[in-house]
Length: 446
Image (cartoon, rainbow, N blue to C red):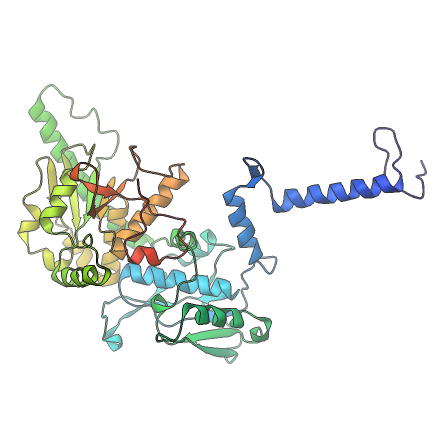
């Protein structure tokens, strides 16, 4: 059937549409299409769902059909140094810098040893000897991208970017520099190489949730995971024996009645070594606060006062090697709490096979997998474990640990909480930068 020349659309409900109607209908169709594509869901009274805002933000940085991260342009950064979790933060910061420049981050070198001042003594270790390279790219696909040096085509196409330093190099100047190097005028360089201080010392321009997304993509290689599982199995084995003895002493209780689930344990990141106590005392003076340092006695008392903690239970102490010879850390605990550390568990040999970085990664996994974790909110190690556990809770719909029993609870023993116990700890994922984690203020208050 011929259509009127003014409107070559099909008939709707048996009626031909005139030109004005056609135009109006076309505008409505276009508007609906854009709404479906750009704003797939709404919440409340017209409010955009937070997850969709994140998606839109992610798309805003996507400049090509492969989710935006160019695979033929690269960013190179200095060797990443210091402790495990300082290195994780530095790595994430390098990833987010590469994302801002819309470049793939060349796989950086980590540091297996721990030398804060003697840089020439640092033992480099490849990223993929600690974390799974392919797994990282799969999990972070479209957000950040890692590349290998073998991916480079023209090794001469390098531009060196000197990172500023000193008090005059403000966060605003740093951000302006990054914006400048994200412009098209630098697209001719296959590699932008940042020289100067290591990424942990760079200015921070990204919210906590962006760091958390990178951290979620960091999966330890199987060898390290298996070693951590050995330690966890040993802890649960000791806990099983402890529970069996307790139930047998009670009489009339079936020892196997509650063994269908893994025996729970508590992990305590116990910071009481001399160098930490010197550091935290200075930090308390500088920040004019009194809730950073905790004595051995205070930690033991507060862990023993955790509301709802069922005993008997094993308490794994993640401590510095210098404390393994101090038997006093295993005495004075509340009845029903059995403290152990790697030496008492006879798993210290597992750790000794590896350099410092791998030892820290094993302990991190053991603490992360604990049923209850207790740490110091001013410790980067403790803070990243609390962040990871917060992410787990958020995934199952828990947004607050206040007044409720939750899975994967974390506590800060340096802050007084309910019933003279440690303070409940969930990371505030809405913080605009990771700085709060370094100053112990990244905790959701009840």
